[in-house]
Length: 96
Image (cartoon, one colour):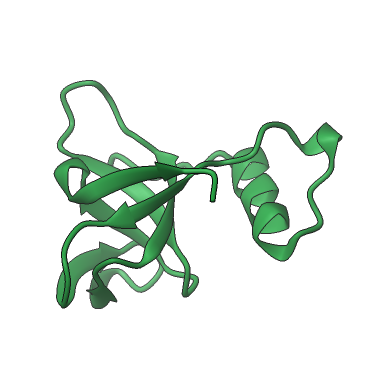
C-alpha cells in the first residue's frame, strides 16, 4: 500500500492545530481543504481497512499528496477518519 507510513510529526502537529494547542516549535500550520460537491462519497479508510461513507463539502487536511503521478492522496477528515481520496475531489481553501 502506498500510504503505509504516515509522517508522525506532521500528524501530531495537525492534531495540535485542530485542538488549538499548536506552538511555533510544532512547525507550520496545515491549510484547510474541502471535498468537492454535495451529498456523500465512499472512500477507503486506512484505519478501518474498508470503504466508509464521507460527507462531501466537509473540511479535510492533506497528510500526504503522494507522488507526482498518483491520482490519490491521504487526508484526515474533520470527523477523525484517515481516508484515501482522489486528488481531483479536493478543493484547496487555505487558512480560514
